[in-house]
Amino acid sequence: MASEDETATLSEEAAAYAEGMERAEEALAAAGAEDAAGEEVEVEPEGGEEPVRRYDEETLRRREAALAQIVQYGDPMLKSRSSEVTEFDQLLTNEILRMFDLMKDGLGVGLAAPQAGKLRRLLVFQTNADAVPQELVNPVIEWLSDETEVAAEGCLSIPRVIVEVDRPLYARVRGQDRNGAEVLIEASGHEARVLQHEIDHLDGILILDRTEKKQRKSAMKALRRGESFSPHEDD
Ligand SMILES: [Zn+2]
Image 1 (cartoon, rainbow, N blue to C red):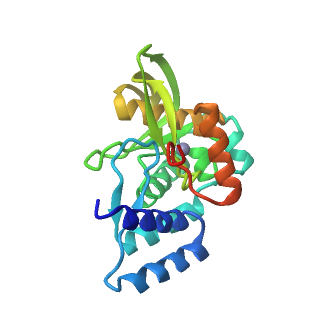
Image 2 (image 1 turned 90 degrees about the horizontal axis):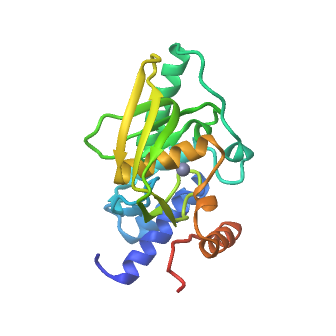
């Protein structure tokens, strides 16, 4: 990292991008004033754990446009239970492809249908840049390890907020693909975490519900004030 001060400024700009086009335009203008060649800004990916990366303006504009289409914290949809998918038709495939685009443009590693405005048991994920994005329809967690791990997680529906979540390190998840064929995933580490995070969305559970009380309180306070939050920043 260049310097603590620079990092702090960039993080604040990144945070502003998550709030809406108006704020994004302001942040872009501010970034442009600082560096006409185009400022790169840090973004926290959905699901957490991936290293913070730096992005150019065009990427950030696309992220902002994606976030504007993603259901944001405060919408009751995010607290609702989604219903089973029963029709494996072209509409489902179209929805999956739309979610792939939102996930890609939003720089997420996963996205659940309620975040895309559909209360259906459907998620997409891509836990590393080289992997092919994958859908999982009607996912069911068959088994979770007793062994757990605490890691920081973000959420495309709760921009600017990072909290620590304790989750099983290994998960076996069964579901279906877009054609209704059965899919079984033995996941570990980051992938297991992302799948659990997205399946939580299908049951109306958010990272704020999964983190310890102190972080939840601080994160909720930051959300009310329109500020960013990450653990241990105020310890
Ligand atoms: Zn999420």
